[in-house]
Length: 490
Image 1 (cartoon, rainbow, N blue to C red):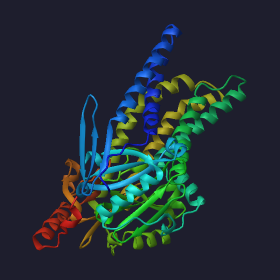
Image 2: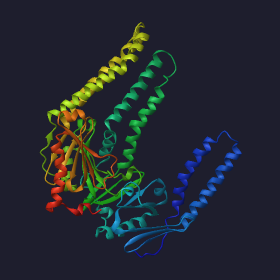
Image 3: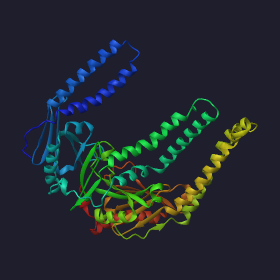
Image 4: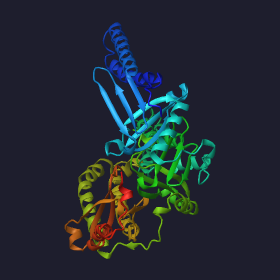
């Protein structure tokens, strides 16, 4: 850390240009009906101005890595001076996209401890790969009082093969998304079958349905395959080091005290295979894209024995003996009434459309006659599914209040076991509607300190006293001295 001013690698101009070129291309596409000479002139002029702007911005932006802070200064029309003290930096991550791989560069992303910058990095700086690695290592000594493990010393707690990555990519897609994609696939197959048997052209919705299946099921699986290829997770002292990626590679390190919650998750398909994955909700590691989510996967889908091993070795601070409590009978009464009301409303909504279909198709022969009964059949299936979902919800949801940790178990199709620390709780909100109030149950929503996950953590239906106990324990820990302020030194 010499403090001498340096610039980002010039290829940052290319990165910025690519984003702007896409925007210009879309704009020119909508101008396509104009004279092509005018469109071409506008395009060339816009690119020239963009190149000049990007070059000037790169030339006049200097970065200094001092002993106590990082300073970024930009002397353009809109001047900028950004000072990032090491004491406020939460994490320093490295990402390599396709452009970076081509030019041998890496993005050094700096996150500070704030709600906004846990989603978008405060600074994203492009350097040659070896320079970015060296700077990250030197900054880590300031941040963590220890260096990063060498590449050859990065031994994952559990070995993740290509087969594991493929299984995770295929079966970690949310079940609701998979079912919807399957419905679109079935519709496209049915449309194609009808087009063949009736000697007509391809069905009107066959191609759009096939596209939706591809968008909902295939694209997410391929994306995750590329994202988690060569997955490694390693713990060194109080730090977890994570890296993965095929085309875009991503490396991050974070302190255990930055973890707000640990989630053991499983989809319906993965649960049939007795596999689960682990996510950790972490403050301040995001990179502005899905690679750097504030809830990184720290273990791909693995069998139950391996999951227990990873939890015990990687995050033992979130492991304890649980004695879970089930929802009371009042919760089942609430779920039954809600299901009954929803079923009645569904029947009323489908009555008129069902009568119209019956009037139109009841007199026809063959498969067309079945269309007269399709809506009543689908309505009945929806009601059966709702009743089953209520039963599963009542059976699955649990709560456990330990001495230092507490747990919510949620999910119908997809399940998650969320373990949280009392010392990370910012607020507990207990709510109950008129039906829940009648049967003496409530729902609790826990907000964790500086948690920037896309949703809060909500419990099932339990007694108000049991949910209020979470807030009481937090206050008791603060007054008795058990509250660990170091966990919240963020």
